[in-house]
Amino acid sequence: MPQIDFRTLFENLPSPHVVLDRGFRFVEANLAYQAVTERSREELLGRGMFELFPNEGPSGRQLRESFERVFATGQPDTLALIPYAIPLPRSLGGGFEMRYWSAVHTPLFDEAGEVAFLLQNTVDVTDIQRLKDMAYGPGGEPAPQPPVEGATQLLQRAQELQETNLVLVEETNQLRNLFMQAPSFMAVLLGPDYTFRLVNNAYQQLVGHRPLIGRPLMEAVPELHGQPFPDILAEVMRTGQAYIGAAASVMLQRAPDAAAEERFVDFIFQPIFDARGAPWGVFVEGSDVTDRIRAEEQQKLLLDELNHRVKNTLATVQSIAAQTLRTSADPEAFKAAFEARLMALSATHDLLTQSVWRGADLNDVIMLELRPHGSDRYTVRGPSVALSPAEALTLGLVFHELATNAAKYGALSSQEGCVRVSWSLHDDGARPRLELSWTEEGGPTVTPPQRQGFGSRLIERSLKGDIDGQADLDFAPQGLRCRLSVRLRVQDAAEAAA
Image (cartoon, rainbow, N blue to C red; front, side):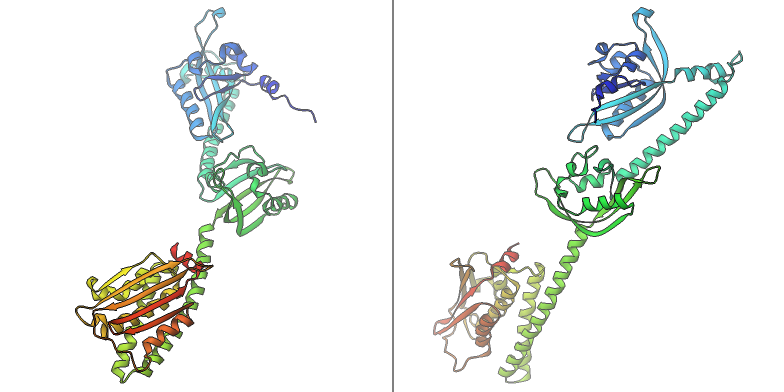
């Protein structure tokens, strides 16, 4: 197939065309423009439009504003009729000649998608205006002499056409603005390569504001290779049937040099038909529903987690109730001990709720039990340790039992007593190991119990049954010492830290 010589084509276009840069300087001018302005290409290039054709009046301002709109908005602009005097060459005696023009200004984009140049196509409609003068006289008054036969009718048709064009231009601009500002993403793809003809702001935002206009789909959005959308477009073009997709996953590069990220879209591919009824393009419309889909996934995850937590909590409450009842001498003692343990469980739940059940910090779990006794009654020292929800709940009950025992019988039951808590984290394998020491000082002399109480059993059994840990209780005369060792779950701990 022979190649088209676009320079020759431009030079020989029958109507005047020029290309201007952002300073309104001539970059190129075809032969028709040179003829109508009686200026050579060498006289035009590099010179400013308003330098060669100055006009400080309303027409000059109107022309300049049209140029500025094109560069500012990236949208074409039309001047249906503009009177504009042009200088006469010296060979004709100099001076100016008033001419009337209809002009279309079209943006030309660079590789970055920015407006770099402006293409002006002008049509000299001076003869039509002169017909008006012949029909009505200057200023619209009836002419003193009868007009040329048919001139009035020709003028009327020209005026009707001009008015119609003005209405069409206004309606087109309104529709284009609605298209560009629509909240859903839209694009028009034409031809077998699905070349971008129109895209709105929402579509540009979806694909990272990359250059699209005039580029084939797979060149402009290459990450779509291997994804189903090109095949769906081909099917729409082949069958002429629209395709509707819901919550479809698509991988898109939304920033230069960034990795493709997953987005979810509701969309429709609507075929565009030519005059013969054959598909020749596709109108793309849809919405980015990524936030909704991720919220739904998070909600399902939370509901599943909640169901699991409720079952575990009920089992824990059942165990606490049974053990408390077995070791309580009377209903009042049972009620007090049971409510205290439930409150400890509730406090840890509140702490986890603040992090949406991702986890809790060890220091926060300990302080829930020690803070009510006053800051002068304890010392706490150790690095930040992220606990999973299960680890936080279990250790929360363990610290509650230790603090309750200290308040009743140990260091916190006297004015001089003190509890010292310290811990360290050891990375000696696939899972980090937490080593914690609870030491009581200054309280009454401790006598080892004759039998194991509920608190001791809860501490030991909870650590072994609910999490991977163990406890060593030493009822030394100077005060209770408890050493805890827990293997932390790496995945849950990372989630808690997040």
